[in-house]
Length: 263
Image 1 (cartoon, rainbow, N blue to C red):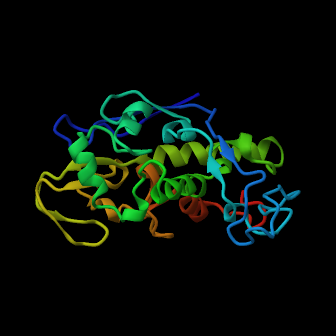
Image 2: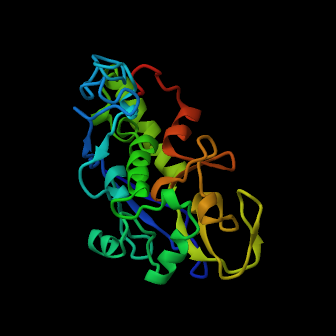
């Protein structure tokens, strides 16, 4: 087990200090085998693993082209293997989240503020229960936070202890230096969005990221990956060279990704 303490913030900071306990065991419940293909439809009998490539053995389309989904309610901290100790950044419980009508909501917001936040997102990407946005979130969890990037338990092709050690060094440095979870707050000053440069007024809901500094704020719809331009799922980001990335595309800036097996 590995312990990370982020930079301590003052008591006046709008983002609380966070202590993260990093656990090697991550929770992944992806359903892929037998799932139909978006591209081939009835021509594919359902996803089946290829011997070594990240494609379907039946139709040869990518694994992500199939209707893969997460079997259970996903708490992103569980998928990352993180345990957050403080109340301010703790994930909302499953029951409270579903009672709001969503499969994910930002922490520490009233029901009214949750609706205000969701109203600022593209309608088809709002994670309402049993909606298109719910499916979108499910797909982005699988795509942006690939399980093989999160634990060596999901890597098939690490060659011996040396490569496994290098993988774990990369993962721990990524979590310590670059990776975090955004926090939704009311803006305390008139400023501008770090992404679109548009106006942000005092009292507007914004997303803040400790790794990017305390002066940077984003409109909820602007908190996106610099590469794929998709919403950062559940506000999980990696910060690199003054830009935000999803974990997948951040990793590809640091280490090459095999186009065959996706590791």
